[in-house]
Amino acid sequence: MSLLIGDNLVVSMHYKLTDSDGNVIDSSEGAEPLAYLHGAGNIIPGLEKALAGKVEGDSLQVQIEPEEGYGEVMQELIQTVDKGMFQGVETIEPGMGFESQGPDGSVHHIVVKEVEGDQVTIDGNHPLAGVQLHFDVEIIGVRVPSDEEVSHGHAH
Image 1 (cartoon, one colour):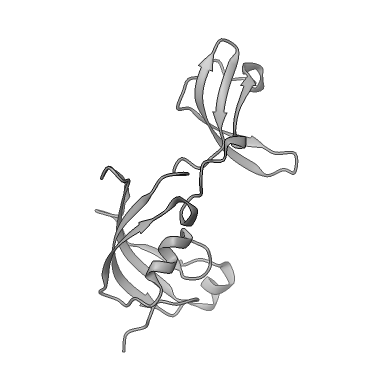
Image 2 (tube, one colour):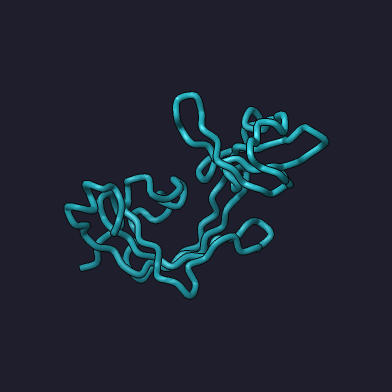
């Protein structure tokens, strides 16, 4: 009997992720299937919800709105800062990514959006924030996890 996808099961799947224009953002084509522990927050909520109750061999197409994906764009995460904030970096150009450390020690990923003189506009939103996502998924396997996978919170 096939296992229905649910919490604390390891799911293996092939997928293709596209945006609303059909541009491929990510895919497992030519690679190993993606394996994750269902219910552990390893994948975006909308996709996890869509996969619940499916079985090995199922294929599905899922449209995920931003609030069930990487969230809406948060304007407060877009800021203009002085170029001096980038110590030791000679050239700063749009598209460059950096990691910054918050006051609490947390690490944030930022992307340079614009450079005008000594002013740099940075964006701390996830690159897919505000994007409607389209997944083509084929479920390759569903299995009971090892004790180690459950304790680590992800598939091995």
